[in-house]
Image 1 (tube, rainbow, N blue to C red):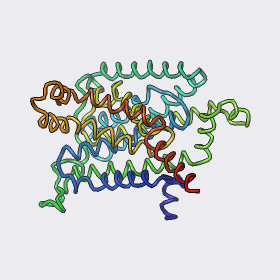
Image 2: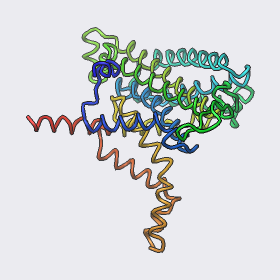
Image 3: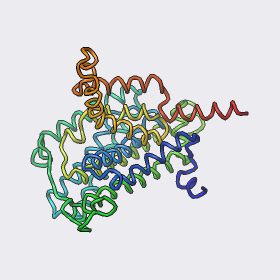
Image 4: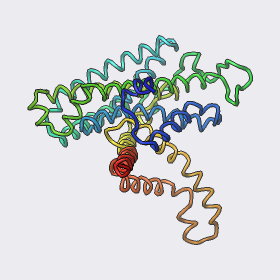
Length: 362
């Protein structure tokens, strides 16, 4: 138990239901290749892992520091393009991956530092507008520099041989899972996501993380006791950008492709914002539960509606409402209800319920 506490930086779930849901999510993702061997299930699980890192990195900004930024997916795109450009221009292999990741981390560091230093002195709404303008400019640049980025078509590239789907480690499936390059890629993503999430937990539960939360709660009081809020906000912006860049690299390695719509679109930014709010701001566990819920709903709601439509076939209004092509309407409705009933997010609601139960018990 003490090892687990240390791994989680003493930030325990504090709710039995939350602990149970997190265990189901972690073990479900860890065993996906064996439990759900289909290609679609593996793709969904891989995207969940990428989104866990991306959403958790955004929560460093929004939930822990109180910064609203619309340029977060720009750093996600930089990470993905770093891998794509290096792998398509160099000999495909681990050297290209290392060069691409290193270059994209350096670019993310420089850009996030510039944005932080020049923009975080202005009021919150103006900072949000500045980041939106920067993100839009970067998206336009990525679409137009076709010689470098592949333009609107994006870039297809080869990954190291170990991660290629054609690489087979065992001729026969083992425990129902094909042990091939895709299997290796999935577990590279799983352990990367796990390591990055534990590192972020360590950061937010360190003295530095406590200062970020103090700035979020009361900027003037934090300044009064000697903390330079601009410095801490800038550092938070830089850290969030670097983690988002790693998430982008993970996505590129999994898809073996990257384009503007894949990693830089505004829809992606809105998804990240929505998952952060649904999971619970200011708690990295919310990134895990929110990403799992969002990705499962986005990928399987339409199939559930097909089953429902078959059951109510012939019923005039109901058959139209449950038609599979209206899945986006129901997805939107589900998330509106989730935000309405869980204003502090899923994690916040579960922790509040556990605290209330303990108080009632005494």
